[in-house]
Amino acid sequence: MTSETVEQRTPWYPSAYRTLLGWEVEWRDGQPWLRTGNGVVGASVPAYLGPLVVMALSRSDQPSPVLELAHEQRWVFLADANDDVPGCHLPLSTVEVLSCPASIPLPAAGSAGRPSRWVRPPDPRNRWLPTLAAITAIASRFD
Image (cartoon, rainbow, N blue to C red; front, side):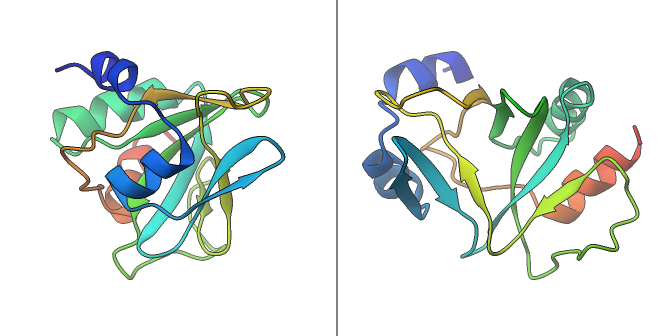
């Protein structure tokens, strides 16, 4: 099943994110938001780097759900914090770590404005996330 098929068959409502993926999601301003924590963080990169990081993660068999933030021209890779969340002293100028507390806009059926879309949607059959360290290491190749 391709990512597009998973996204088409999964009705992404806040309850689906909670039930199928175990994510902490809140509804705010007509939009669902993922609250980072419980092991889930985000790594935000400029949109021009996004496809390169997606390909490298796929080649290393570490797929990550990826969001495109429409108004910010950035892609957010969801990651497992793995108890190692780099702080503001991250050596990469292009990667912004969205650790706790942060909120990431999620696409959902019926949400207003659509500030984000899935580039690579989550797969409810595989809830595993790559580590933040793996994503930042791969992104550093292109920084």
